[in-house]
Image (cartoon, rainbow, N blue to C red; front, side, top):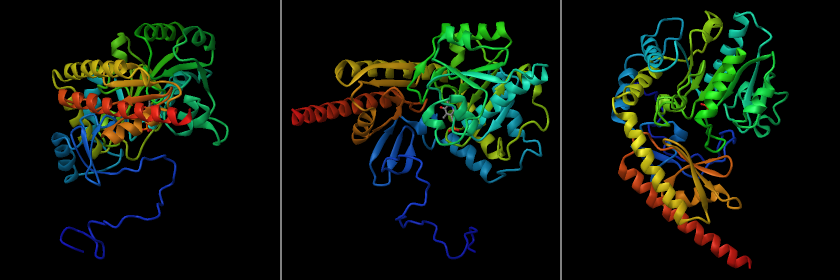
Length: 420
Ligand SMILES: *Cc1c(COP(=O)(O)O)cnc(C)c1O
């Protein structure tokens, strides 16, 4: 063993490329790997630079290698990584207190992922009705095209055939109605309904925002029927829309909320927030996670929240958002044959690609130009940049996107000509 604890017989760099991948092939990956990141930019292993408007799918809220986050992580790494939840974790108590103070919530449960945060939300809602004497209320209503994660319960909660197929009978207790359809929602409510669960802005579904008005109407519907409102803000929460949580725009609060993605800035972290009322059934022994909320995650989570709650920060997100939106509107104007509109809120924006042109083609053209985005449902390209992007980053995005659209238009024109 060397002085640095390195086991004998291993080189530190392991630079030999792996020729046959042993990674379970569940992802359709782009043939591109990165070596490092600097703010909103990624540097590929071959040296090319890319403007990262995917941010690891809305995860790297402060871009790459933010010095304050690097410091928080490395300082904690030298002290203590993990103790388990058999003991008090001061960083966890601090982050929970701060999240509760900044939101509707009274209690927070920490997880390692979005799906686990949604799982906790589902369990909390079902347990609430048991604890309050209505065990027959256990069903949850959601919307079509939803995405809540890849565990057995969260794929059932989303209800999409493409997520459920091949994995046996779906977990029971989930009903679905068209996105934002109030009448269908009312009709679906029964004496067994425990909660309504949805994303205020559908992410994977293709950036579909629910109107503030509908959000308020659903809150009312829940109140009138003794139903809990669960929001999945795994993607749209943590400052993404220009407020700490997206539902704040509508001026109403949920009973339970799942969040993740941006909350750890790239460190695996999620959280389930609940009001005191909704959390009534979740006492000692009802739920747990070995890793959830460990000291390493909490050091990063608290540092992310420091940046997010810094006075004026969300104003800067909103300013960057309106300038990005304007730039995207100009792209739509310049390339009407390719993209037909912009939608979303804050820095959670989607470009709707014209039907008949696969959104993947625009993503490929963007990558060739040096810009990274994310595909979404309904033939959209999602732009989910770091929340701390600068005016220069926005201008660079507009420039690269324009190049990509021009290149793709030329390609499509050439194809059409060759076919005729
Ligand atoms: C990403 C996402 C999830 C799942 O998060 P994981 O960390 O992948 O488990 C759940 N809900 C929404 C809205 C998401 O965007």
